[in-house]
Length: 358
Image 1 (spheres, rainbow, N blue to C red):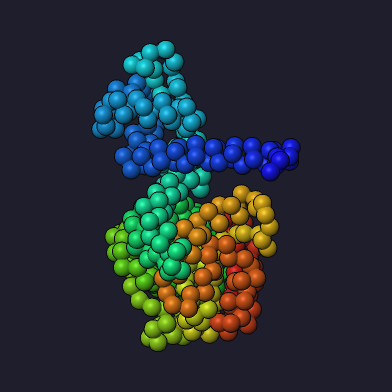
Image 2: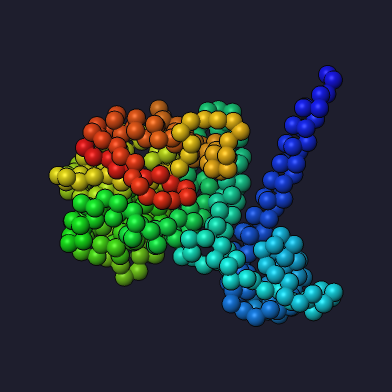
């Protein structure tokens, strides 16, 4: 076949894109190493240091220390404070702004927890390949601690900084009611950062975190400290939970559920009179278009290899995938028996928020 200028331009653009993606993937692995070994924390707030000084401070081998520092500097993650021309005397420093991206756990600029999420997906790829062949799924626990912890860490800053200050106040009636008591249920709570944030924001309310993953509930209980909150590995459809909660929340979990309509119906059954459900899930385009923007690419990137695969483990799965569009949430809400579904005026880079009323 004769190549055309248009075909060659497309070829070169895709080749360049893939090459850049590989560089990004390799740099992500180095971020993973930095997180796992506490290397960013060793640099954070420290004066400029040589690779030998850094090795001693971080507790790693000097040769690996040198290579990792040089890689990070090459990638623009850290600065060369003094370029002596000699690897032994060259000094490195972590800029304060970059520290917010890689190792400040409550910073809204934190991005580094995406690295263990990528590694968790990579570890599960053999199972993902088999799921592609058979139409089956990949159990959530097959992705291991990396993805569970990564999800908890990447969402934590939003919960700490925005949940009580911005999200719940966008439901003014419930914000006022919960300030003096009431009950909150946080469904699909994971490692509990959202549940703890709810309990801190509304100390007079009774707060319950529910998840079906035992490892997540165990981690949530350990992380709660002295905060008055309860975590249970329990199905929201349990009749004992019906009719007693002023607010039921689902944060970035509806798209992961094999049976989202049933989950929303269970959430609806849990509501006390004049209660409501708050859903926060992916902020994607209204409809499919190709090529997509960065947010579409980001969300599709997780979907088939994780979110969709995990949901496909159950029979008759809705198989939503990560790219859950507004019309899909509205359709699920209607099927679950809600009378209204309102998109709330909450600013967030990654999530769209919905208030569901019976």
